[in-house]
Picture 1: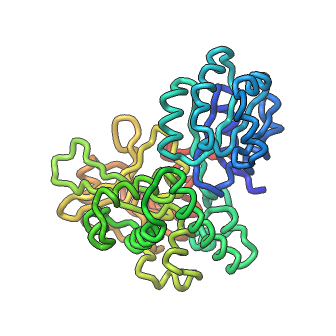
Picture 2: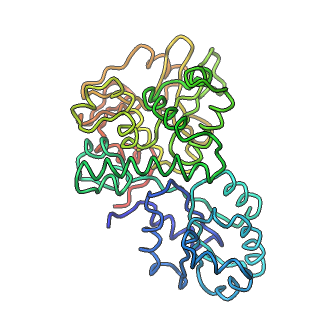
Picture 3: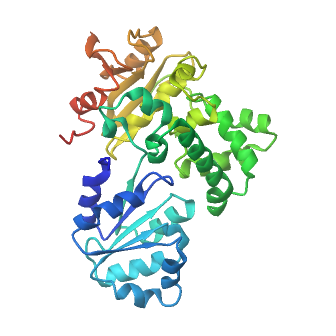
Length: 393
């Protein structure tokens, strides 16, 4: 089993909070991880998959009596969105016996789930997001394979390209035809697939709801609502612009990405690295891949943005921590990166924070004062040097 980086943090949260929620897209490995860690939990645990009728029915008659019978155990509830009314009961049980490790909840971040947990379990719950495999978890495998196929375990570990492609197609179909409608989205699966394909084709571009709505023949509110659901389901990311205390006219539209590079390439029917490198979306794909890699490793108090002024000066990523910019990042699909005039102007606008230029495989070196170049392989070590992540060696 591939060691997941969330492991130590999950065990820490379970030891210190009554409820720990692990959120993430379907098939990302939440269930596998928790089952693997059952023996490492501080308490004896019991697992229920609420999509299995025999488990679900146990909570249908008298859930309070049933859960009280398990008060000395860690109760793991998978697909928790299937029991939206149970959060008030969990709160009452915790208030009667407030101990760490009472519950572990697994689920996708539906609006209903987040709203119910926030309202019912405030001060009692800790949230963890589980991402698809990161390259840091997979080294020394080649980055190109991970970039091409993404980090969903079944897609990455599939024994053949055909198996991977079938799984990605089935995954997409299930999300569009079952999961998103279950979460409350009333947009047709066909429209959602067309929307995702359009987002894929503009990977890393500015999000313009009007353009998407006109292209698809629907209203702007329909598009915004659909993208809200896609983001809450961890399929897309809207990267917000940074414009705090900057005395310039700045772009204020978010940039949009398909989070998982394998899903992106499936939507674009890219099936090998040569096709990817020759595709118009290659640069945007690489940018999204590195952004996902970085954000999935950031601590909760480090906030990611991009920076772009109206005259075109930009930086792919700026990380805010505390009261200012901790690190700026520029992402280049080249091992001989050259900074543009706009990059330099952007750094000056932001008070000249350190800049890390991320390439596929360049050797680490200092490009100029306060600017360093690294590769995907050494990215984690460089982020560690800037105090943004901790290595678990």
